[in-house]
Length: 228
Image (cartoon, rainbow, N blue to C red):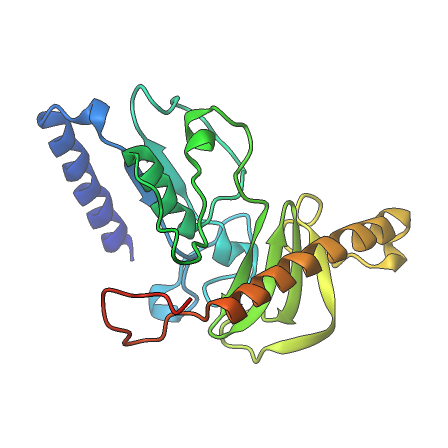
């Protein structure tokens, strides 16, 4: 594992050095990112740091990954942000950078985050995203809240479906150990009555979109032509 990290660091440095040697530093947008959190399997075990959870769960340790961006003269250096950015946002963002429009004949899950990256906006272009494990929706992250529909603390556990969604305030409970309930007092009740309707509306909107345009099936020939 340590050897992999050292190799990855070295190869990334070679790419950055090559960009500089070619005089393309000012004209090159570099993105360093990961699509998921660390593994829990013994041979590849990694740490999720401050967060709880590993790959294959819907916990923050599985979802919160580094997203580093470098574009000298366009993106201010030294910025840090907790804004929500999803992997599906990369393609629309790059299209925005290049001045291209995304296809209008199909649904696009991602949004351009160029205003956030360049500092023209202090907020993300999205408020949340759906969390799937395989073909099942396990959770929905919305603003600083997470609504879990299925309990899975480890990839080695059997999933347990909640009878009632479990809501976490990630600012107060970043490790997702203490769900909000009406029994948590006035604040807990207010969070439930405010968060659940908003998340329910987002989930219904997403499910409706699946009916309007089902996911692309494995093996669909290229170029893909939407059915609608």
